[in-house]
Image 1 (tube, rainbow over the protein chains, first blue to last red):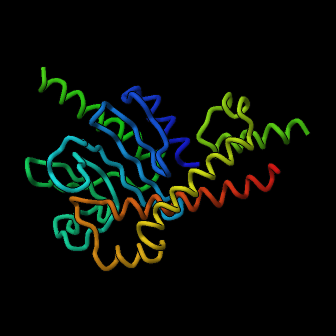
Image 2 (spheres, one colour):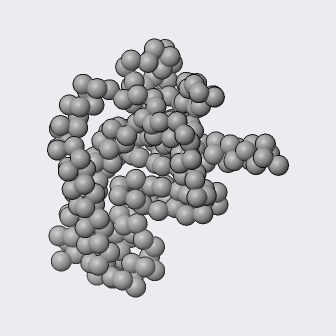
Length: 130
Length: 97
């Protein structure tokens, strides 16, 4: 099952306090506020991988950044990307920055990229805080 | 016979969200039925929230998803994943009984 592979890879990264199955998604906890959510439909290979900050005051799903393949038909910045519908989005102040994504809904390929990005993000966050 | 049992045990390890040790300790049937129960519970919650998967798909098509909030898309992904896993586990349960 897809989540067995994902859970093992996330646990091996040693980035997370806890990695668990919540319903049919994988949730990896960085700390009390930060979680990485992995949604994946193995039949269509559609996906959403996102780092969530529950303390964010902005409305919506509180993602800091994430990759998914939802087409967002009404967002021209996403439609213009060469990797469309695959895209990466990250917060920059009150706005979103949309970028091309290397993800393809292949977990063996995608999850190591997610781990590398989250690791770099956490390192940068720690540096900025110290 | 021993080889066949070992193979089936490996197949189940790939299906179920527990370690080999836990599978041995708790027993295959217990782990399988617990996971099936959790997935059915989640599908039930999603059905209470959205009606049916087809209704959710129609809503997704009609409303779309904003980059600010992927909740509808996440529910669709999770519902499809749960349904896929349930089918596989129910098949595994048939061969276990």
